[in-house]
Image (cartoon, rainbow, N blue to C red; front, side, top):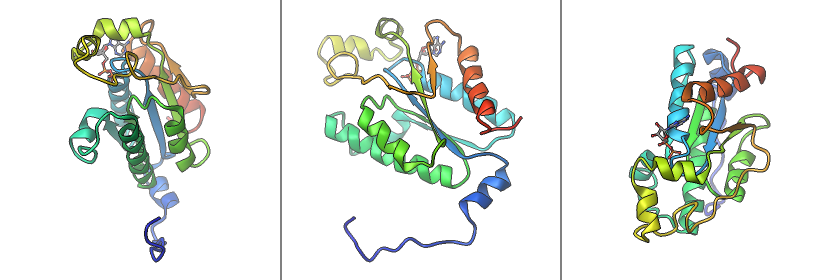
Length: 200
Ligand code: ADP
């Protein structure tokens, strides 16, 4: 920390009180996987379902964050680390506000995901690994990014010339090549129910 005189202020409305008012267990649903593996699509479907059930959510999405908070960051290894560190802190603040946070970022490095997991209390970090094969992602290529990366027009592209480190112990694994959007979203909702994060 740069300033030793900064003291954490304990406010009267607590994290627990905010969560109780919302009748839910705040947590971070962390979607990780290759570009086009389905993170945004599934996170959106899960959020919609939670919203319909009356839950309080917030979806943080890779591209959107890079337009604002992290617009000073690129795709070098150092910038990717800082990108995830900031998003982790942001996710933690939203969870502190009582929300179920859905974070959809490639987040290719194990150590970065570990850093975010360690920011959260036990059971509040739910790592959701999009186990979609590279060939399928490349075939989808909704933004034409793989094509550009193959031609060398984009450098450090995850899966092509930048590594993706597969999660070792994710809470949920989704293979979107074999399951529909609805099936994948239902698996996440099931996890939340069986782990008492939601109760309906
Ligand atoms: P990411 O956020 O990982 O980059 P997106 O969700 O933006 O991925 O893109 C995934 C693409 O794959 C979308 O065009 C989506 O419609 C398509 N898709 C096809 N089948 C599935 C599925 N079962 N789950 C998620 N996405 C799917």
